[in-house]
Amino acid sequence: MTQAAGLLARRSGSLMALLLMALAGAICLLFALHIAVGAKPLPLGTVIEALLARDPKAFDHSIIWDLRLPRALIAITVGAALAVSGALMQGVTRNPLADPGLLGLMAGASFAVVMTSLVFGPAMTNWAPWIAALGAFVTALAVYAVAHWTPGGPTPLTLTLTGAVISAFLAALVSIVHLLNEDSFDNLRVWLSGSLSGRSLETLGVTAPPIIVALLLGLALAPRVTALAMGDDVAKGLGIKTGQLKLQLLVVVVVLTSSAVALAGPLGFVGLVIPHVARLLVGSDYRWIVPFSALIGAAFLLGTDTLARIAIPPREISTGIITAMVGAPVFIQLVRMRAR
Image 1: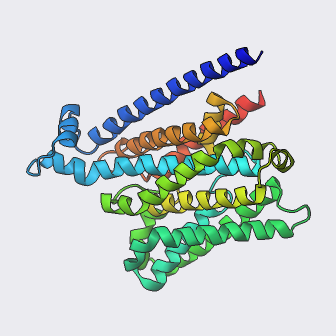
Image 2: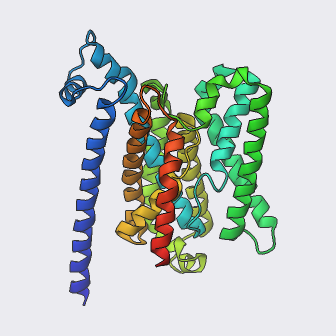
Image 3: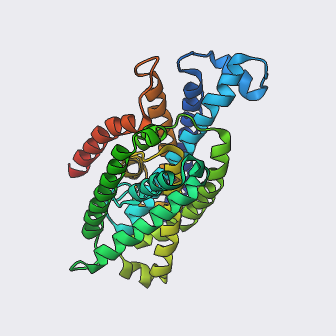
């Protein structure tokens, strides 16, 4: 029996590795497509040539390096960050509806950036990742505190309801500020709808290191999240310090969410839908859910951002609108599949 179980585990691991390689290949194809299409379509050969050997005098190469390459890399980074953040939150809270948006982290990060820009002006945008992180962390503490004071304590239901209420309250405050200072918030209007445009490699260079560290830490903690998802009693029985683990996961989720919001604004449905797609492929083991969520999230945001750029040429739609339009029906279908 032990040998048979070991053989089955090796075969399962080989299958998962093949699926991960297939997803990586799909990301490469979507990456090339994302760079090639746009207001000015570019041949795939030109894209490859520009990536391998940039000619500073070639106009097409400048388009790729200055505009399209940063946007594609940001789509990969933000998609992976939000998807992993949602997967970890769903595992910790044992709530299939948990994601950075529903539990208030996105609203807190957005509120902090907007209010800082109102008080100190656009010059504070260089500090956006750290400001967003502070806003997300404070909101997470507020959600937990309010849920803790309710009868029954911070259950998955009370956390979700509290997060939804606080998110709505913060969104209302942002709307009021926006209406009172329309001229000051022209540069934030598109960002608040969720957009990847106008970002540079320098902006990505500021936020990428904390995202990479948080993703690696999330991968390292993933096996213990599987035990935590079974309940605190089960996790404690396996020798896991649940309080310490939850604090570590909270830090990971806050870093991933706030960095993603700083880069692309509050993008919805990525952290909610992608972990469910990953579970359909790999089951309930977070050792696989986390890496699959990262790759599927990156591919999803690359695809939706490509669609946002080419849907109504020569204009483009905010990526957050496309993620909602695509993510909502996908989530409904996932719910129906799980119900059956």
